[in-house]
Length: 485
Image (cartoon, rainbow, N blue to C red):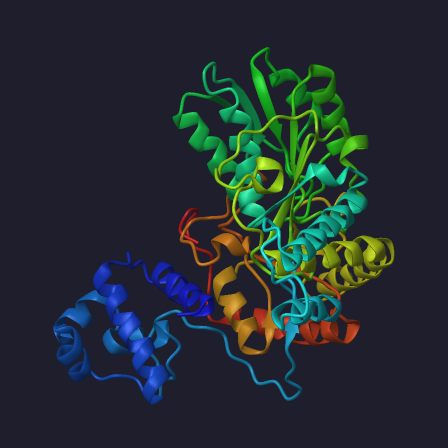
């Protein structure tokens, strides 16, 4: 099943107060696969024959039996209305696809595609960089050049860049790498309650190993107070980890102030810059940053590769042991093609940052102004003043974000209701919890813009959002109790 169907199932289960079990999942998976193959939904007979599940069991598990099953996996219903909460549907006569989920991932830009095509066609880089052959030497030189390109973007040394398998791995390497260097005496780690799950779960894991952890609260705009960081630093503090900008609400943290505090205290400062890199200026040496993570697929590069800046004064324990690649911090034969593609993406992103950020900021401001005119009661989550230029997190009153999101999908508008890493989860966004958004009153949609976003795209979205919104209001689609959406 794709993420759309998984999200739909989760939303339908929540809306109808159904706790999904293995039986539910087996029925839904079979129905989905059957429809994909036969272009018609299975009957009760098919379930009995293939799964041994009777009509009585299906009717017990789903509020409206087979009709619920069809609705939950997006099989068209040609029958009377049944009161499962469904996706709002409207007619559009000018259908177009508008991708507004750049915080989740970006497309691979043309210049980067050319690099990948050259690599996969065998024109360059196919050798093992650790071998002594000529193809191996050429591959090593390509990786060395990639180090230089990413380092130049950050104004650091090439040897301070470590390529990883993704941004999550980079965050894990930074946090666990520092912590494991203090395994005997343990120590104290500081982070914030709006960090990405790859940071929070890494820190929480270290807590299970005996490390002390302080998780700071943020204010209603999502800011970490630098004074709060200073107050919580102890003699045994071994790491402060605060992201550059939030992936859900776009709030930019006061990194320079926190960096100064950490530098004065002699505590390593880790910054998750996966959303911020290439969108705001980031020079770790000037900002007092010891460790900083970035990810390729957020900057128009391929998935499956990330990078971590590691200041030469900072000592990490590796998570992977083996051939001592990447300065002995990330063993394993390098993903040559994706590394050189990421370096190209980073170089282009950095070169275009000022002009593209200004363009996206203008589009974002136009979009929010028009939304306010059409739906005056919306709220903006996070700070508009200190915010990534391409991000908007909007709270729409009296509607369920899941239904709204799926309705937008139906008309070709692709957005998110939160972090893509947890899309489809039954849990409320920890970020919206942290900033005090009333989930009883507002359904949140995250819009994020990018290289292909145009004003015409936004006008299309603005034309139909009020229509969809009114459809949801008419249907009585209201937010669910906190923790259920």
